[in-house]
Image 1 (cartoon, one colour):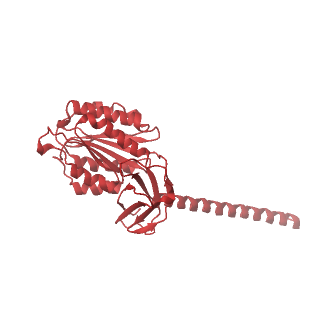
Image 2 (cartoon, one colour; image 1 turned 180 degrees about the vertical axis):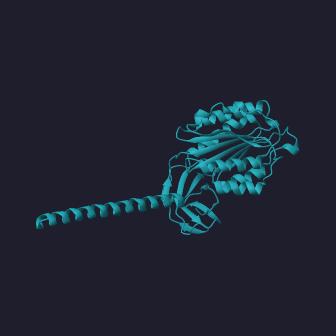
Image 3 (cartoon, one colour; image 1 turned 30 degrees about the horizontal axis):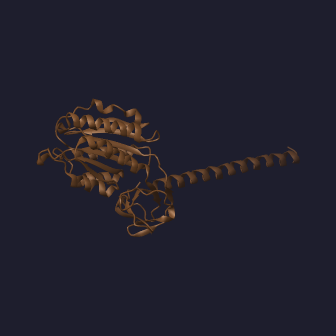
Length: 308
């Protein structure tokens, strides 16, 4: 090999080494960026926030700078903010115990079908579950939600009421959801008579799954006192989640009640922040406030900082 060939060979080898080096650096950059993106996605705490005035009217049009969010009393920089509707993963849990026979079940089917077909959006997803003395998944996560129309037609009321067991079972489905924002709508007309899980346990499991929980309690004055729905228990579950419990006097009111829930889902804000403290599996309190204006805020009151 002459001197020129030798230099050409060395130049070629150097070029190969340079290409390999650049490729290696690029791959490391992409992996690092992906890891950072994944970590941000996992570590960001997102909170759905409902703002209303003294008359209960939902307030829209606020900006990021109008809000403050605190974790365990410490102000957090808001890194995620949306004042428009974002997709939701929503579950419907319907009481199908014996007391729902006849018109109550017919009204519930009609209200749920309208909720899924007309009040949610195509980008949302939903599941439908029912319960009597045991929980039952009627239809798994489905998109669009309108595809679930008529699924409750296969549910025939019978048996007792295992509400807390069913809440725990429903919480498990949210680990496989598509969207960060999640909600569970519970419809019940009776007190729990058959659960193995307690109210406190069911509440904690739902807090770890982190859906907004809305409950519609059918509290008919005609029902025996021992079978009337436990409104306070439902409020204990919904209040910490950022949702609410609405009491209606009969199943005919289920339609308007679900419309109010859909309206709220359409007008919520989404706030997010990255906690400074590393996950430690402990409960952390959350408080959201609007800096000015006599507004009422509803948001989840905390979360469990679960280790990966």
